[in-house]
Length: 140
Image 1 (tube, helix red, strand yellow):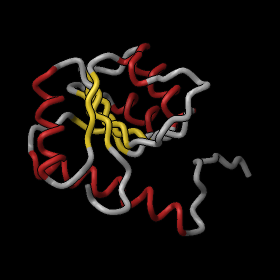
Image 2 (cartoon, rainbow, N blue to C red):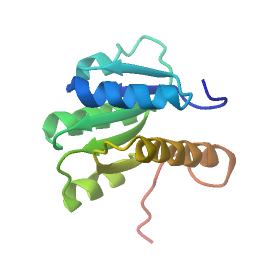
Image 3 (tube, rainbow, N blue to C red):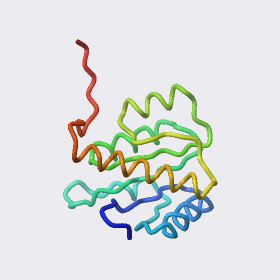
Image 4 (tube, helix red, strand yellow):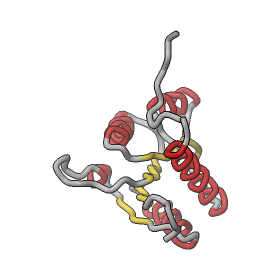
């Protein structure tokens, strides 16, 4: 596993992308686990949980994806969303909610590793600088 990086959880109901992402990231030196069901990503609240970088891959953002993302973020997880069909409105809503990144699903190993590396750099930078941990909106 790469030093000083979060473990990665790849969450997708489609085995092809889930397996592609896991194999790509493991080959790049990351600790990766996979899940196919959304509810498996939400352990009971009384359990201590590790913080993960969650890669959520889906066809489109619907109610169940929005609820899952909200729950993951509320539990302190970092989320990158890969979507087959991503509207500008959905992308904006995801960024406002606090996801690390939201983009079209990629099948390029190089692009996937770059997206993860950039997200991990931003997460690490926020830990050691003046950037707030949570995004806040100021109305002044």
